[in-house]
Every structure is written in structure tokens, then in C-alpha cells.
Amino acid sequence: MSRGTPARPSGHLAAVLASIAVLLAAAPRGPVRAAPWWEARLVLAVRGAYEVKTSAASFTGEYTYGARWAGILERDGPDVLLYHARSEEREWRVSEKAVRPDGTVVLTEKDVPGRPALRIHYVLRLDGELVFDVSVEGFKVPLGACPDRLDLDLPASMEHGGAAAGGYDDFVTAGTNRLAVAADGMEKKTAEKPFVWEWKRERWVAAASGTTVRLAG
Image 1: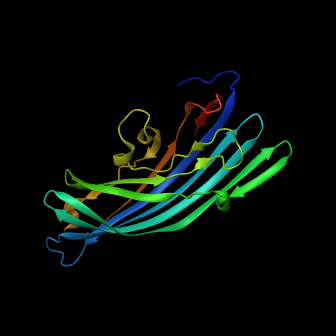
Image 2: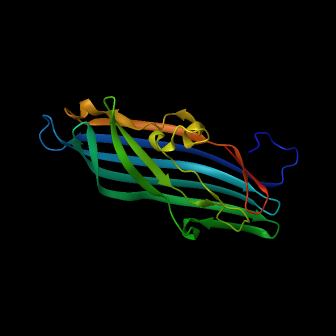
Image 3: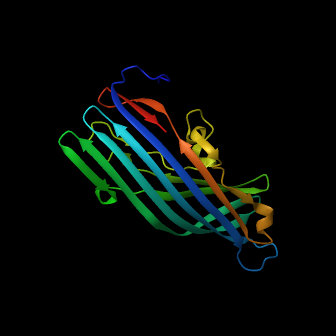
């Protein structure tokens, strides 16, 4: 991996920037006193942009994704069991413009074979908090014809991103992606907390065609 910028880069220049907002809430299910069950919900909104430049074309794209999840948390001694109730996509849009010598082509979400998906992996009860492990499955960019396509990194909570060098967490530039609410407070009332963070990344990756791909935000 190269950390510098060559004077004459060969390959593809790509830029990625995203802002993320999450609302996490939980409330007792049934009588408030020592409730063993909690209803939990998570609302996610993502807005981002990317750019890929090659010797043959320039791709610029913008995307928005929104989803809502609901589930049940059950007290299990010192731990918490997670039951998924429902999940729904609230918004999914992507627009990419490819500029080539022979013209311009615009692609949208209708041209993407897959779509993002919100995943709630598990919940930990840790030091008086409920910590959520959350991620969003992404898609490859650019959408248009290109010899090298890369997975676009979409949001992940700190619990999922991991502490390893080069992980998602290392590129959170503002706010926090640690999704946690006070566990003790939930036994008495609704616990609700918003989270907002921004993310950008720069890296050099050896591409399949033997060129070098640079991601920058």
C-alpha cells in the first residue's frame, strides 16, 4: 500500500464522502417495573457521493439510503437476547454520470443489480450500556463499464467496524459511530439517542487489471 501520491498516477482516481444519521431508541415492553423485554427501533439515513476517473472516462455519483428496523430485546441474566421483528427500506436512490469522449451516460438505482441492506447483528450489555453491532451491505462502483469496480463502503457501527488498523472506524472524521444507549435507564423509561457522523477514506489498492486504484474522500 502506498501512502504518497505519484506525480503521474496510472489507474483510477476515486473520491468517496458520506454523512450518516442514526436514531436509536428502546422502551420497556409491558409493565415498566423491571421489564424483562424491551422494544427497540433504529432509523438510519445515509447520504454520500463518489467520483472515479480513468484514462477513458469520468464517473460521478450521489446516493441516499434510508432504512428502519424494529426488534425485541430480552434480558437473559447479564446478557441480552435480540429478536428481529421487521425491517424496511425507506429510501434508496443513486445517480451516476459517466462522461466519455463519445458522450455522457446517466445510470440510476434501476441499473444496480443489488441494493444496500441494513443488518443488526447483535446487542451487547457492556458497562451499563446496550451496544449495537450494525452494518449496511453496500454495492460496487462505478455502475458504468469500467475494468475495475470496487465495493463502496457503507456505514458500520464501531462494534462492527473493529479496532484493527485500516478498519471503518479509522475513517470517521466527525461524530461517533458507537451506537449505545444506557441499559439501566431503559428499565424505567424510553431511552432514545441520535447519532451523526461523517466518513471519508483514502487508500491505494492493487486493481484486478494491474493498475492502481486510489480512493479518497
